[in-house]
Length: 88
Image (cartoon, rainbow, N blue to C red; front, side):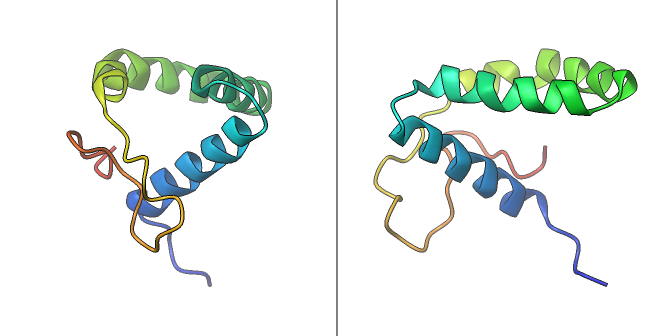
């Protein structure tokens, strides 16, 4: 059985995906909207209800985060200079 992914790895994968989409010319918000539209279409309504609750609880922290811009070519984790997202 494969090891369970921890939340830090999941956050890093999502941030990496956003960066790839931004490199195609999308803004960060547009990249997030593209990802969200795919997730929203594929998950159950019950999962979307949970997602809405998480959005209401944590959006402010994500919105205020200042993402490291110089980690793109390094082997260091992606993250925010001010907020820790791992516990989410």
